[in-house]
Length: 463
Image (spheres, rainbow, N blue to C red):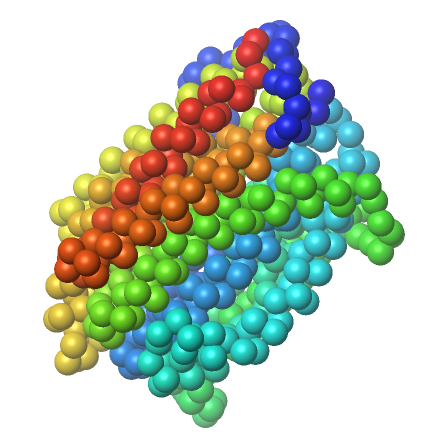
């Protein structure tokens, strides 16, 4: 029984064989672990760029932080269509409708390609955009060098996300993990060659990092497409059969996808805006912010993987009409996510300096300043771990029952109506600087988490 974000909440029958909370936790983790690994590995692509550009130069590091965060912001908006594929395919599998699986996935690819083409001008004219946002000319020029090349990898990156959503909904995410790990290794090798000009390769700096990223995205797409097409477990879906044939599923993917993308943009845009404002404060502060954000994002990927697994399990339960399993699974997912957050908080508070030091060359004359400032920001990051974990899990559960529009409104109000103004006022009017910016993040994330959790428990089907 389909559940749209605008329909009345149906009452589903009890599952005939309800799972215990321990069984729910086990099933969640079996699916989540490879997803967590693949998200962490995906982030390592950006972390590798940040580390190697940090070894290359502070200006290149600052430009790389801005460029990669800008690319990611554009990517997040477009990835909403890929994320919409996950609950749709999971629900179709819950109903045992394999034809709909192919149609949903294909229409997700259609919309991803169209979005990627539409965004090309943004990448080409990124330099003037960065200047208009208050960045120094040399940083904006280096950022544009990166963005013009990296933009060529947007469509492959979005198609990779669609295939990841398909495989996750099939509860077969292991291949995604191994492909992403392979991509990290290829990216590190290409960065070593192209950023620094080793083994006779040209020394390209930030452009070398961008070229490496594009090659890795194409490499990952080819591997996943071959797997999804040729593997015996997936041949029957014939994902690329009649690829250019329109299907009515396009409308549903669009309806679910654009609010997901805009919600992701609201959160990612908040962090990107903070990065831009950190650039107003100084290069050292921006570099420290970039490093602290990379570390925080790495731990956040654990919660994203759990959230994806929760989306799949909620979608399957919704498709099968198992309301009790959906609600019990939701409680278990939230508890597991919060439990893991405790370990992250301990790491940020007990060992911030060693974490920041990983991203810098010890010989850099400004390394001591960056390490000190980055350690303070990691302490701030510890404050919003619980809220950040809760909000991404609530989003995943809401997507599982295909409720995406109201969460989008909640994100807009809490992130930009409250969190962003608070960050600006605390940083520049109360003179708290970078700490004030990160306090605004804490406020926005906490309010979003509370509102989304209330929304889910009101919308979740009753047994």
